Every structure is written in structure tokens, then in C-alpha cells.
Image 1 (cartoon, one colour):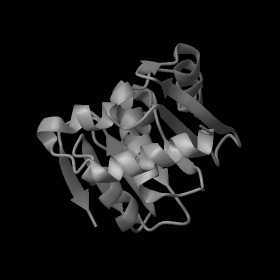
Image 2 (cartoon, one colour):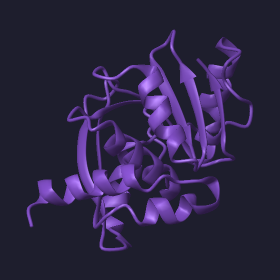
Image 3 (tube, one colour):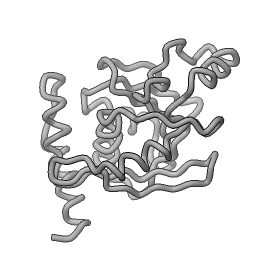
Length: 181
């Protein structure tokens, strides 16, 4: 079976799963044989196309690379990104059937970075899940904020914030909730 066929099977499985909050973890685990993240950073110019999970196992080196990619680009600090957040991101991307990689706007944020952003904007949470490595702000030029948010919310596995004016979606592995438009 080709890699493309495996990814197609993953997408088909996620669409057919019709998840609910009570089985969200099972939905994400039952998504197929491969999980992959494709992203780029406009801030650093870096790109990543990484299979990080195969046959029920997270690939330690791949996850380590993703952690580095999602670092606080302002000061270079790296934190382990919660695997549940990676799974939500991958599942939403597959549901969108997009060839385009995510643009990562914000992954991990150090407390110093979060405080600086909070001083400039009312929209930055004091206890942001970004500081715990449990959130990501993402964009796809080929999909609307609404489409991305609906895909992420359909996983029923964390928080989804829609920021239409800024053209991005926040995904996290915290409590199931949604905000914005």
C-alpha cells in the first residue's frame, strides 16, 4: 500500500468516525496507520513534513523535531508539545483534505513572550495553553477560518478559537469549547 493510500484511508476513517466527546480519544487513536503534520513558519522560514505516528506508536525523533519546529521563535525556547494537540491538528488537516501545509503562527510561547503579547493585546490569555505546549495558532490559505474551525471542532477533543479578522484558528487540547467567529 502506498503512503498516499494510507493517508487517504486515514482521512476516510476520520470522516466516517462521527466522534463525540466521550469517544474523542478513541477517535483520534483510531484514525489510521499513519499520522502526519505538514507546516511552515513565516517567521523562521522553516518547513516540516513529518510522519510522527505509525501503527499505534509515536515516533520519538519525529515528535522531537516537531517540538523544535513549534518552539517560541522569539527566544528559541523549546517545550514538548502535548501529543493530543498534534493529533487534533493532524485530524483537522485530514478532514479538510488540504494539500497545503498549515502556516504555524504560534506554537509554544514562553511566559516572557506571553506576557509581552498580553501587554499589547487583550486577546492573549494570562494562563494561555500555549505556555504549556498545549495549543497552536494555524492558518491555511486554501481554507476559510470557518472551515478550519469546523474541522477542528468536529474532533470534539479540545478548544477551538476562530479569529476571522486575523485569519487563523486556535486549536488546543484543553476543555472542549469554542469561541470567536
